[in-house]
Structures are given as structure tokens and as C-alpha cells.
Image (cartoon, rainbow, N blue to C red; front, side, top):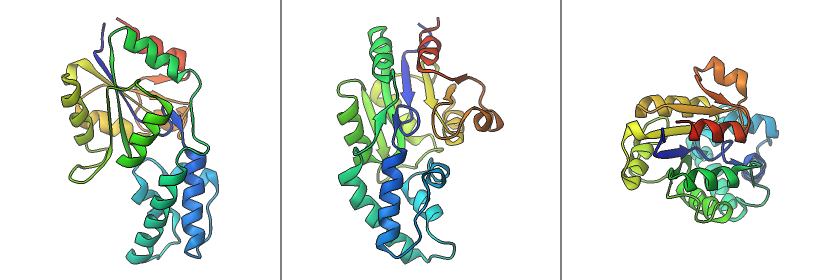
Amino acid sequence: MKYSAAIFDMDGTILNTLDDLADAANYALSANGMPVRTTDEVRLFVGNGVRKLIERAVPSGTDVSGIAKVYADFSSYYAAHCADRTMPYEGMHELLAVIRSAGIKTAVVSNKDDYAVQTLARVYFPALFDAVAGVHEGIKRKPAPDTVFEVMKRLNVTKEQCIYIGDSEVDIETSQNAGIPCISVSWGFKGRDFLEEHGAHIIADTVPELTDLLLRE
């Protein structure tokens, strides 16, 4: 077996969370008298964590206190509604079951706040991940490699045993910073052309293709 551990991004990789993210962002914007955003706009805003999503979504010139208020409103709403319309990508449960049965450990590393990552992993993928980590106090978010190193330690694996899977340029940068290879997936929020432009070397267009890449000797 080529890999002993597969570390997955969450949004746009294993879960289509876009509708719930857009709903929460627009709830928070509306609650603060700000214009709402389209789903396609929110698609472009995600990848660097909720705080950065909010900074990109609010009107230009919004002050720090205004951003903080929208962020707080987003967080309270999303905590209650993060699983309203979110769905796993087709075939993802089967992929995880297959690679785990082959002896590959599985983990999630996300720039979502940790409360949401833990909830979504538990709701949609019960018992299918050996380690789950979102953004929490005292650790740098991706593309810093800190959360990747955290789950590697919990999985008791080395860099040479790991592969990282994600759908964005942030994931490509994260894998480079962690010193591990990356498989980019084109079904997520950014698409194949974008990924190639941002340095993706291996791209899976379908879940079965990703499965084959992970099981390749």
C-alpha cells in the first residue's frame, strides 16, 4: 500500500456545504443591513476560513467592529443550520469504507471552525474518520501546516505515509507547506482549470478515480 493515511479537506471535497454557507452568510449580512451575496459569490469567498469569508462578503470599507458583528451572527446561525442542505458528494461514503478496509487511516483537516467540523463529520460520516480537526484556538489555519501535523500525530504516521486531498489552492499550498503530496479534486468549489492554474499536479475528476489513486501501489 502506497499510503497509510489519507487526510481530507471538508468543504468542496467530501461535503457540498455551499448552500448552508451561503444561507448563513446572507442571514448575517441581512441582520446587519448589508446586501446579500449570490451563491456563486460565496463559492469564491470560501477556503480560508469563516472570518475571511465574512471579510470578503461584507461591503468594502466595513470597519472591524462591523465585520466582527457579522462574523458572530454567522457563527450563531451556522451552528444551528450547518446541516440543513449540506450533502456528501456521491460515492464518498463508499470511498472511505473501501480505503479504511484496505488499512488506510482517514482524517479531516478543515478551515471551518472546529465546532462545525466535528458536527458535520459526526452527522454525515459516523465512524469513518480516525481524526477530525477544524480551526481552534492556538493553532494556525491552512495553508499553514499546523492542523495537518496535528492529525498526523494523532494518527501516528509520518509525512512519507500521508496523502492530502482537497479542492482548492489553499489545499495545494497546505500540502506543500506540510511536505506531503496532494490530490486535487475537480468536483468542488474551484474546478479543474482553476486547480491547474494554481499548481495542481494530480487531479481526480470523479470519486472512483480518487479511490483508484489512493489504492494504487
